[in-house]
Structure formats: structure tokens, C-alpha cells
Length: 426
Image (cartoon, rainbow, N blue to C red; front, side, top):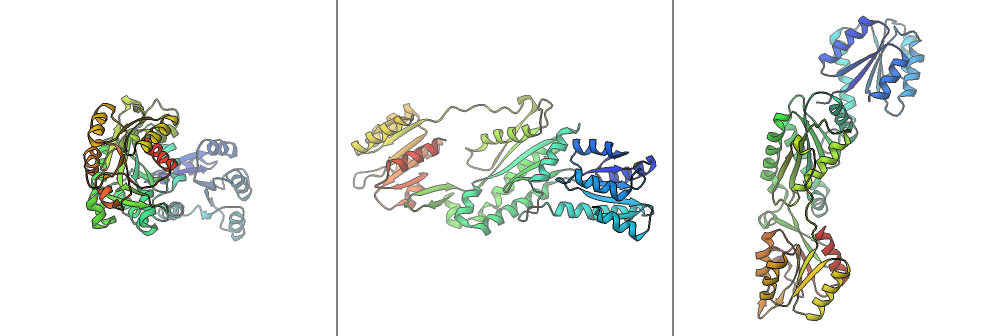
């Protein structure tokens, strides 16, 4: 649930206390100011979304509202005027000055609560993502900032769908929207009364919850997502555990199915700014990227949001019977600062592979009559290595099912394969 900041401006103490209690009973935050200078200070330090102004202030109500509206031009908070006057001209003048609502002091507590809820509902609904019906980035950042400044402990979860942009390209906009709608429904089913969920990008979410629930929520979300994943793919794609993406050059890349990645961390007093939370969560979620299934990682306070730096990936092993081509590939890789080794046959490849431990393998189809290199791809694909398979035969589906990440038809441009090597190394 999102807690908005409400500024109450009144020169009468009992009025301020009365409405502060009403607001807090609605589980919202209320701040009291006596005059314009007090109000300016609060507006500068807090991102106020509602302002309740009583005509007990020393200035004329409509003039005061004009000043407040100018001071809050960019934020555009909802202004509710409360007056003891029932004169129509006073109401019209106040509304003309910039108030969003005009209420009489005789209004009951119940009616005020209902009217306030209506304004809050419209405020939230105008800030929802049209696809997921979850709060957008602007309010999410406000919620992060507020939770960071509060003394109450909490946990933050960053929720990303790995491969969602590729899925969008291959399966279209409608299918992409269905994935987001389904995930948002799953997330909403896990939320407690005090939890908050909001977008940080169009397809990434921040969840704020209590420390005891964080791991339970993360565990449930990855479990639920993997169990509905088959709904978004054809039977063939789901059974093969990949989709195929093509381009104009007839290159075929194997794309893994979508996975849900979640990073979670507790509020840390050592952090100086709420934006550090987002940076640390993004760094932490990198630990999930090599997982073949949906997964989550939780960083406790003792780790202080730091992620262990991984060893740089920079090694390529080339299995290419054509000696001239293999030497050319090796030389071009080395000019690009990439370590490269070459093998001319299966036995040589396996010996070098064990010692060299490459990050990317370039494998030629081999001799159709004598030596077929598909078995090599099947064997090494289990070792978290990227495989570029080149072939002059149009057997791309068989190649990708064997474990290759890219099908590259011969003849190919050297620049193309180097660009793919760099992409896979990064």
C-alpha cells in the first residue's frame, strides 16, 4: 500500500490535530504547518502529494492557494480547501485559485474520509501502468525515498524477467503484455497490507516488504513463474527449452526461455542515498544471470551490498578444419585482445578444451561423411559456455537443439563472427 504525504496548513491547533488523526487513521502520513514559511520548508523537504488548507490562516484563502500552486507547480499536489464559509462566491473564487476541492468545516469525519479516499484513488489510478495496473516509476521512486528516510526496517526486492525483450521481438506485443499482466497478478497475490509494489522500468519492479517475508515472497514468485511459463510458448519451444531468433543474414540464434530473476536486500544504515538501493539491487541481480531457471539472491546487511567481481571472460577455442580460416579467426581475435586457440579435429579440440577452458567455442559442422561435431556441442553445452556453430548445411534446428547458441551459415563475414564473440564474452 502506498502512503502519501499530506500537508495540513492551519493556524488553529485543534483543527490541525483533528485532521492529522483522521489522515493517520487512513494509514497515510500527515505533517502540520502553521503558515506559508512553514509550508515552504515542508514542501522543499518532502514530496507532498496532498495539501489541506484551512481558512484559519492569516491570509485570504484564495490568495494563499495561488501562492501554494505556484510553489508546487512541478509536483502538482491535490489541494483541498476547508472553510467555515458557505458563500458560493467564496467557493468559486477558491476553486478558481487552484483548489481541487472545497469543503465546509461542518463536514463529518466519515464524509471527509470518503472524499479524501476518492482523491487518493484518482491520484493512484492516474499513475498506474496501463498494462499491469501497477504504480509507475515516479511514485515508485517516491516510495523508495520515503521508506529509506523512515526508521522502520524493511527489505527491497528487484524483480526482472530475463529475456522479456527478446520474447517481445519474437512473439509480439500482445504476448509480451500477457506475460506482464500474469506476473503482476502473481505479485499482487503475495502482497501484505503494508507492502508496496511499483515499476522501476516498463518491465521491472521494486517490491518493498518486511524483512521476515522477503525470502518467502522471492521463493514463491520464482516457483510460480516457472510453473506458468509453458503458457507463453509453443509445445515445441517449451520442450526444447529455447526459441529461435532469425535475422536478414539467415543467422539463427538460440534464445533461452524467459526466467524470473530477483535480488533482495535489507535496508542498510551505511547507505547514504535511496538511489544506492537501486544500484546495489542491480549489481546483486547480476549473480542470477547465468542460472538456467528462475532464481533469487538475497544480500544480508553484513555484505553491505557488494558483489564479488567475476573473472573476465576472454578466451575462444576454434574448431575449424579449414586451416586458412582458423588462422584468420585466431589472428583477428588476438588483434581484438581476445585469447584464441585453434583445433583441426575432434581429438585435438577435446585436449585443448580441458587445458584452455574457453568461454566461447566456434565449431564447424565437420565432414558430413566422416566427422560430425554435433556431439561436441552436446557435451560442452552443459559447461556454461557459449557455442557458435558454423555450417554450410541448412540443419539449424538440429544444431541449436544440440546446444549451440548461434547458427552461422557459411560463408560468413569475419566482422559478423567477431561481433558475436564479443557479445557472448560480455
